[in-house]
Image 1 (cartoon, rainbow, N blue to C red):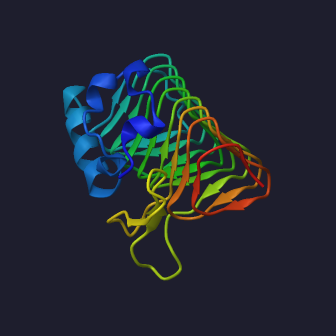
Image 2 (cartoon, rainbow, N blue to C red):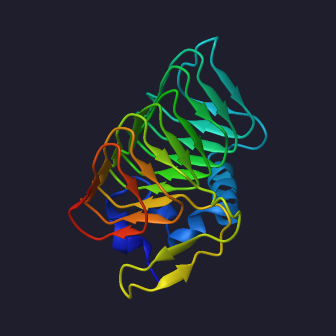
Length: 221
């Protein structure tokens, strides 16, 4: 089985003490919902937003949402709880955060980017026209403009992934599962990752490439 530490430097995260489960699948689906609920309560959030930064009048924030300090929320952004947004993160014009989203510190959820059911670790960026569904982005991951992390198979059944250790096709236990993207990995503009894609740290997908499976090193062309 793949573990969190195969992909992410947990110890260097600002909220590293919150990531105690070894399996990344504990932070997707219903596991993410339960984890976020606990985290939000620790920060004093129940049914209504707790906001420590300025929110423009034209932005919409509703439900159990935590917004930390020095967060930049731009006009027309829409943020629906449960969502946690850490210090120094940017949520740009027209972004849509649909709920069950964790964004750590210094992240970017950009213009016309839609995110749901996903984790952005510190410094992760989806700056322009991206879709991030049921995925985990490691530290300093950068998604090129137009990147799509598809999270649902056409067959609408369980998503499998290729274990980077054994090479075996392994069930995720999830019907909706996008991608696991390790620290400092990146995607080029208009790339598409199929459900169950995994990028190990410091790998990359070139622009306009459709990537399936697990990328253990180098570039997906």
